[in-house]
Each structure stands twice: as structure tokens, then as C-alpha cells.
Length: 242
Image 1 (cartoon, rainbow, N blue to C red):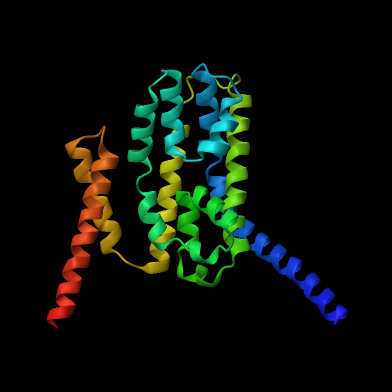
Image 2 (image 1 turned 90 degrees about the vertical axis):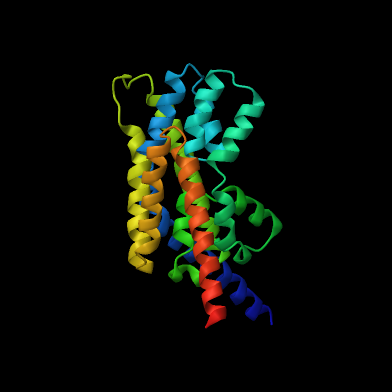
């Protein structure tokens, strides 16, 4: 009996390590893709007049990509807490919809669930909702999120350290996030091969840009969500009529 228990105990960590390694391999391209973005955020923190140590703090605690760039400006301008809260709600409201299909049910343990909810980024969502991820374990899902979290904090801290060496005339680093989402969108299309949904999203973005470039994200997301809900309601009615 003791021999069997020892063998079982020796197999479990090995399986966990294998899942963590698999998670690292899965998230590695996303980690590489956000290197310029993380460096850009670190540089922005220093050039905004904030202390360099604000960069790793924002990367570790806020961990919200686009919101971190916006938050740097709000902190530098000493914006009221209410304005920061409303801005965060509008920018990150999409995460409410992520939670519908994110495999949180496979993350056992209250503590792990809490961290997985906190670390639910766009990249983690895109990597864990594919058909191939249906059987992934908690270790792999948490590994993907944790590795990406560590990589992001490291990149932001490095950017803050290099901020004084990079002249403010250097522009274009913020385009890394756009390039990253383009790649993730292409990969998602290869998996699902659904043309109407990305075409609808592109149409909503273009219309939103024509209406108001400053509020393009909010308007575009609202139009897209309304279109998705409307198409779902129509599909349900058609199925009932048939």
C-alpha cells in the first residue's frame, strides 16, 4: 500500500509539471508579442513623471493592458477616484462576456479560482476557449495565466528601467497591442472558420469610428453585442418556427 501511495505521489507532480510546461509553450508566443507593449508602458510611466517602481506595481496589481496605459495618464493628472473607476468599468466591461465561456469550472479551489478570475486577460481568454482546450487541466490554465502575468510584469519593469535611455521621439510601440489582437483574431478564425462574426466585428468598428473616434471602443462593442444578441434571438425564433 505504501509503495502504491509513493508511486501515486511521484506521478502527480510529474503530471503537474508536464501541464505547466505545456501551458508555457502555449502562452510563449503571446508573451513574446507583448514585449514591445510592456516596454512601452514602462517607458510611458517614467516619461509621465511617475517613479519607476510604479511600472511593476501597475503590471502586477492592475494587469489590464489598455487600462494600464490609461491609468498612467489619470495618475499623472491626479484624476479623482470616481473617474478612474468609471474609466476602468468602460474599458474592461468586455470581461463580463469573457466569463461566460471561460473554463473557470475546470479551475478547482477557491484561491485558484480567485486568481484565475483576476488574471483573465484577452490573451488568456483567446488561448483557453479553443476546441483543443476543452480537456485542459487547472495546472495548464493557471500556468498560461501565471506565466503571462510574470512576463508582463518583467517587460513593464524592464521598460521602466530603460525609460531614461529611450528618447521620447521614438513612437509606434503602442501599436504592438493592435498587432497582437490581429494575430489572435487570425488564429481564432483558423480554428472556427466563421467569417460572419469577424466581418460583423469589423463592420461595427468601422461604423463606431465614423460616429466618434474618441469613443470608438465603447460604441463598437455596444453595437457588436447588440448584433450578437439580436442574431441569437432570431436564431431561436427560427428554430421554434421550424
